[in-house]
Length: 305
Image 1 (cartoon, rainbow, N blue to C red):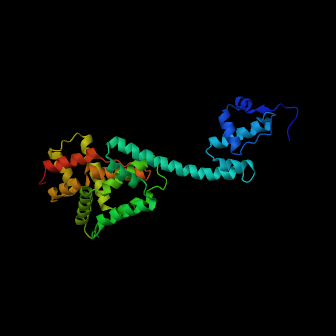
Image 2 (image 1 turned 90 degrees about the vertical axis):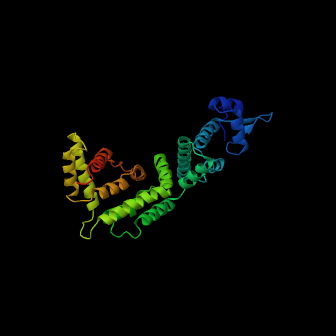
Image 3 (image 1 turned 60 degrees about the vertical axis):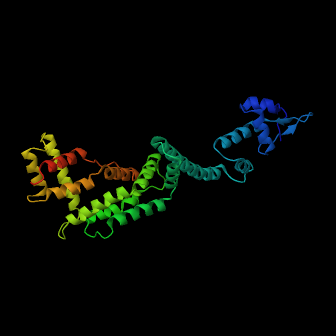
C-alpha cells in the first residue's frame, strides 16, 4: 500500500536520490529484488519512499558480497540477515585463505625470479593441507633419526614434535616460510647435513649422559665464548686455548669437535630453525653466530689442546 500524499519516483529520480546508476536499479528490478509499486501511463516504473529504504538494504548486502539469491531470501523474510552473514563469514574466511596463499606464492616467485616449473612446485607445496604438511615434517624427522637411538632424547623429542605448531590458517609470512622450508626438506644436500648432525650427536653420547646434555653443552659454549668476546680475547691467544679446555675438558679430540660443530652450525641448518620459529609463531631463537664463530676460530688455532 502506498502513501498517496508522497510523490512517486521514476527510476531516474530514484537513481539521483540513492546515488546508484539507472542501469543498476533496472537490473535489480529485472532480477526481482526491487519491485516498482506501479507503472506510469507510459509504462515507466515508479517507486516510493519504501523503495528507497529497500534499495539501500540491497546495496549494503551486495557491497558485503552477498549474491542476488541470498539478497532475495533476506528481502522475502525466508532467512534473517544474521544467518546469511554467518554463512558469508565462513565463505570469506575461505577466500581470504586462498588469497593469502596466492599472495605468498606470487611474492616468493617475484623475489626469487622463479621459473614456471619452480612456481608450479611452490604453488603445490603452499596448498597442501595441514595434515599433509605435518606428514612431510614427521617423515623428515624419522628419516633423520632412523637407527640413531642414542641421539639426545631431548633433541629427538624436539625433532619429532616440530610439526605440532604448523598452523591450519597460516599468515602470509608463514606460507612463505612453509614454501621455503618444504623445498629445503627435499634438498638432498640439506638432508645430508641434518643427518650428519644427528649422527654426530648420537656418537657423542654415552649411556650415562643425562637427557638435554647436548643443549647444556651448547649453552655452556655460548656463555664461555660470549665472555671471551666481551674480554676481546683473540681466538689465537693462549687464553682462548684455556677457554677451550674449560669447555671441552683436557684431552678432548678438538679436530673431531670442530668437525661436529661445523655440521650443526651450517647456515642452512640455522635457516631451518628460523623457519620453524616462523611457522610456530614463536620468537626466533638467537643463532649466537658470533659465539660459535669464535669457538670455531679457536679450535682451528688450537687443534691439539
